[in-house]
Figure 1 (cartoon, rainbow, N blue to C red):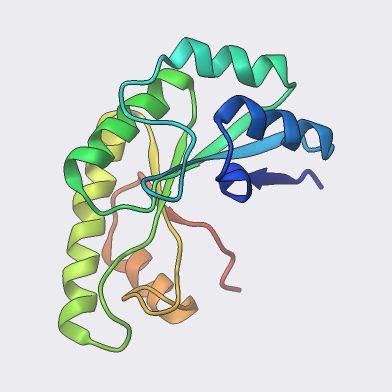
Figure 2: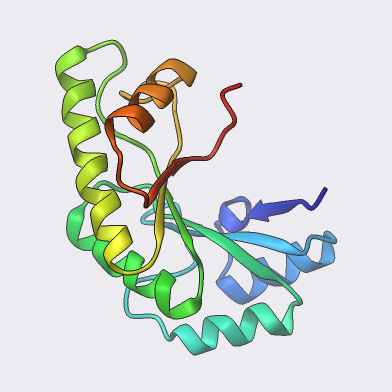
Length: 160
């Protein structure tokens, strides 16, 4: 088994410091936080080569970016940055409200759109089921997967 960690845990420091601490902790893999207002270690417009160099310097492989947004423009920029860095997955939550059918349908349609956007840049969209959101458990996650046939979507948990 290989383990990684998200830089969100080091939200109070810059990317280089966060990566240093991930390396010191003995991890080989890292998910980069792009969470506006919380842990924005990477941002739209960042130099992809600099990020690649920092990852190499700290002997880390980036497996994903956590974007935590449903803003179309922001996601489009993060998908492009992920592609330039060579990171194949961007994670988001579905938004919406738990237990509200109209909200669930709306969120599924939005995830379909985002999956297409991700696929257009060669990246996959991963949707994190999250408490309080429309996609929040195995049942709603499986529903999302059955209703969004775009190959660029996945869930980051095993519902079996």
